[in-house]
Amino acid sequence: MPDWRSMILGFLFVLAWSSAFTSARIVVADAPPFLALSFRFLISGVIALAIGLAAGQRIRLTKSQWIGVLVFGLCQNALYLGLNFEAMQTIEAGLASIIASMLPLIVAALGRAFFGERLTPLAMAGLVIGFSGVVYIMQARMGASADIYGLSLCLIGVLALSIATLLVRGVSVGGNLWMVVGLQMLVGSFALFPVSVALETWEINWTWPLFWAFLYTTLIPGVAATMIWFILVGRIGAVPAATFHFLNPFLGVFIAFLILGEPITLTDFIGVVIIMIGILAVQLSKRHGNRAV
Image: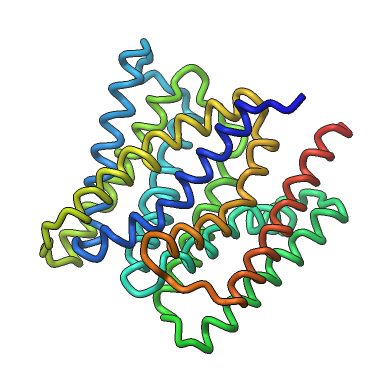
């Protein structure tokens, strides 16, 4: 019988993750991206630490956990999200979500190239299919004069997160989940703030869309999605949970269309379906590989 609760949790997680690009696009229209993200991480980090303290957790981390905090705080929060926020001043939220959805594909490819991880034929096919979908969309977007600077930032960001994922894999958060999450966010906040001081002009257009988008991106993708993800992994395991990521390209593009009115072309639709098939193939190959062990 299907585990409906896990399916609902998985859908809620991927919905929150995919919507983050649209809310970010709204935020950076009225506020400097690095400054806004630094304060988002500060608030999310304090909330996560408060939840942890209320649950009886303390900041007592192992050496490997501290390494994970620093690596993910810098690579995921400062680089990946920081570069995405900066990029969405010039590219559409839907396109940014498509590039970000390459994460499972890049992790698998880098694991094979640098760590000698064995890939099944299904995984290899998934990589080829997934990257083909990205190339298919990109060639059309480039013809439509997509901003090269923004695209490059998104690609560097997802590559940084992929490398971080491989470097700290296997690091357990133990019983200090909220402490680890909160500290990662504070690392990202402290890393981005001096960048904002050095590079940005602090001109903020105080509007209601900015307020609601900032509140949403802080509480939902920032805190709630993290909680849902770890609950989901605890229920069904990391590999089955990661399968939900194959919905990210579709939902990211659809939410941007629904909220921001970003157009969806036939090329986008076909490319997103191809990417989803590739991601699903890679994730299913991991699940079958784990069963065979």
